[in-house]
Image (cartoon, rainbow, N blue to C red; front, top):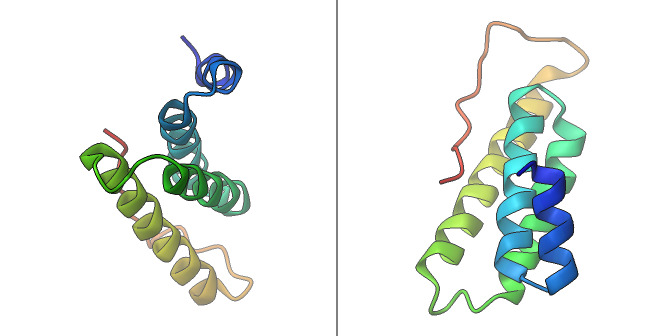
Length: 98
């Protein structure tokens, strides 16, 4: 199943964890490609949706939120350093979704 299909199905049935998980994967793919604006949007949407799940009792939900938040910090730091330059030597190690 493709990520687009996973997101559509999760949205259709209202499975918040599935939505969060899929958005996190989109964020990871975008960030890995250097598409930081789309990565930020995907990670922020993922965090917001993870927050709507029962993360207090969901170990996986808490881990997902943490990964998204840590990757967002890495992206924001990277964007601050770039100041208009394309930096190809400074590879970021994003945290991969499980």
